[in-house]
Length: 71
Image: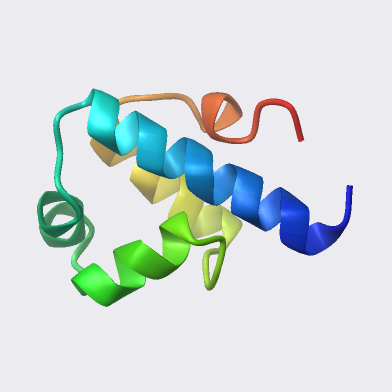
């Protein structure tokens, strides 16, 4: 799977996990201390690092593995 496809897949899983938790992008941005634009980029498969994935997973209450499943 090409790198961009992987990033988009992970972004989609972030979005799904956020919504399943009942959080808006604004809620997640406040918890992470970033802008809503940053959260939108993460969910679009842009500008996230492994460290960011760990932070997102912690806030949402899921494992990092669940955010990268199928990759």
